[in-house]
Image (cartoon, rainbow, N blue to C red; front, side, top):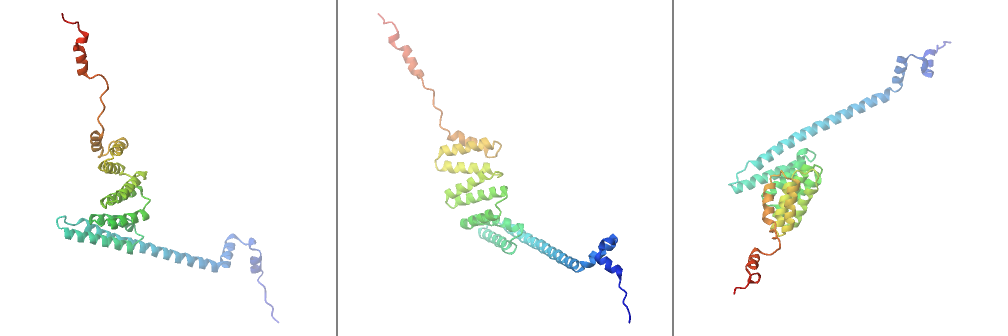
Length: 261
């Protein structure tokens, strides 16, 4: 009958790993959790592959969107103002290309700006309803950039006014004045003052012109605002008193002279 000799060292190592050297303890720990470690490595590798693929696709999409935007800009700018029909076709081509960017690459930076350029192109075609819709879409999607937001509200206000809706236009202009970092407040104040002046609301127009001068003294609109203030200001009343002619008549009146014999 044969006897199997038990490996006491393995038994001690498993039951009392603290007696082992540090390197052997680490190896034993790795052996125990080998399956979990392999799984973690596989998961991390797959995550890296997926992330890299997404980044590559995003960059590829951004490049394609940039190429489309270049085509749209060319269509918008490269047009003859003498040939009306050709200009309409180029503007429509620009609008179509910008809409393709929005539909095919909605997450690209170019898509966020596309609504603004669509609004400009439609406004030039006097499609005011379409332009208003485009500007409002831009405000909904990219309403956090103060400089751009002020510019879009100004274009929206001008489009409303051109469409005959002055009330909505004035509301859009006033939105610009409420954006703290908007860079076009001086121009908007000037446009609002002109609207008030056109409607014969002289006092309101004067107040807006004066506000422009007070808040934006170096604005390119300041000189014209000064001129409008001088024209619209009521004439100053002359100081009340005895007119000079009456004083002369009183001095020459016979009541103050001695009667001739």
